Image 1 (cartoon, rainbow, N blue to C red):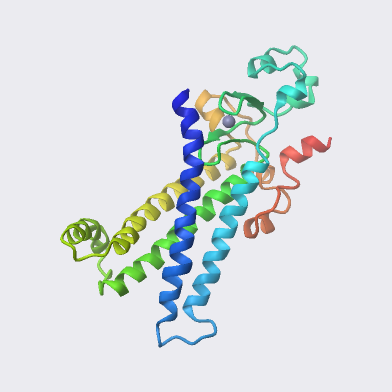
Image 2 (image 1 turned 135 degrees about the vertical axis):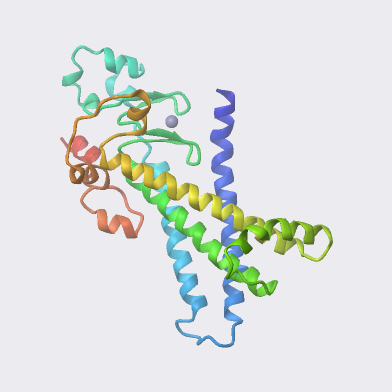
Length: 275
Ligand SMILES: [Zn+2]
């Protein structure tokens, strides 16, 4: 439990450090190096377009990250006025009449020390539980983090190929870059700043692929109307049309929610709250 508590503090700090380093490298190294290209026109230059794309992706990733934390699933303990856990909810004989137990898969998270409704999983990078309230923002956070990492990877590869006069036309050149650059670094032929950018390339690739995989799996579960917690516990869910499952999570303003980080209005949770 102590390890999990430490991880719950270290993981958000790690995420914020990586975000800060990515911002500094993009804004002070990659984008200024694109402006040095004499063949580009000042207006709608690749540097400006790339800068605008990176700011759009990172604003969405950070905005949804803040919304996930702000909209963490509320404490059902207060609502039930029992101060207990999931066991209390399950044992209540009149739970069908309780508005708080209307949603399935209620769970007590020991790290957050609260009972949450429609619990999916505890996310260490946000230090919060993911449930019906913040699922849409969590999926958007994973998607935009993945895109921002892959965008930084492409910009970083362009920067390294210009600085070191390397060609990445052969895909195997990227795999050989790390062992080659480590040997060059220790022989003094590579600057520490260039070595740092090369290490970040592999980190962005790893985080980008992990977030894309996590996001795809989460969307698959949403389409099936399941939560990660239900899958883990082997709970059987009622079969519903996939459009209905999607609307429960993404709400009515799903299109605007895909483009800008906003609160999830009109979702399943808010409908239950309004009743
Ligand atoms: Zn939790």
